[in-house]
Length: 180
Length: 198
Image 1 (cartoon, rainbow over the protein chains, first blue to last red):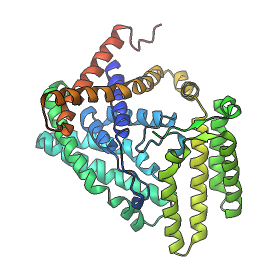
Image 2: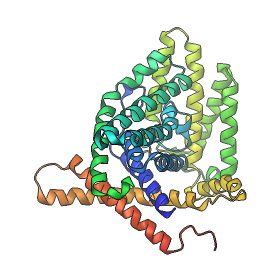
Image 3: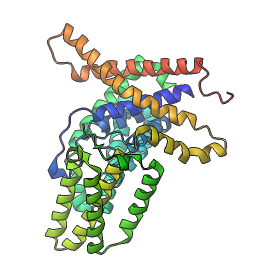
């Protein structure tokens, strides 16, 4: 129990700290900022597993809702829940659950491969599905335009998925107790 | 960072629960109306409130969603339906601005108190809510600690190598902070942890 709470808080704080890394907000991409936070989301799923990972995302989003300016670009407060990127926020916990479950299901293919499959499907396919639907509902954009608006982030996120599965392998090698 | 400060005392002194209820109410209201004239009126009220609240730091906090709104409006206008674009953009602008001002006017301690009240029903059915509060407090404490740990690793690297560190430090960084979290858990457990007998 104590273990769960501290690890969940640690990853929530990790995602928060990643948001403090200086970023570029691309105006051409509808103000969706490029963020290292996706890396934290992928790692939460890979290292903590689906349920603890999702809890850490929920705690992080809770802290943002309480007003801490921790989202990429220094956004925070309740304003982000009605803003155009809310779809990504809603998608985060679901992406993490997908990543955690997929990683568990494919671990026998090797930690690196499993991590990559899980991060790509959960952190990109599932997450972007939510992000695009969010843009369509909030900004009333058409499917094609919403997809175009976020497509520019996909190469960066593929890079983050590779990085996340590499880090996950290293961390699990150093602390085998995580795999129990 | 994009921290918004509210200077007006009267707004800061209003009870947090009341302000959040007002925000929730306006949230629903704005989605119920779709005549641009009414939306302009509501938006104007929120702008006046913002001016009266004497908010600082709004520009950096709202630049990104602002750009997005201009683009969404342009996209709708190009397709010919600029009224729809105006409606959508006014709605988002109103809500984002109001939510930002209201959450900036509520200190963290009051926000936590409201959260505690919202979670109360969970306690009635016997679920412990203390871990939630502890996790949130711990997240706020861990975040600056993580930045310090990263800086520490960067400095140790620089003392030994002329090359730039960056990604090579990520794995040792994560391993060391996971160890920290587990030690914190041991310390929590040693002090009684979440034992419900008080």
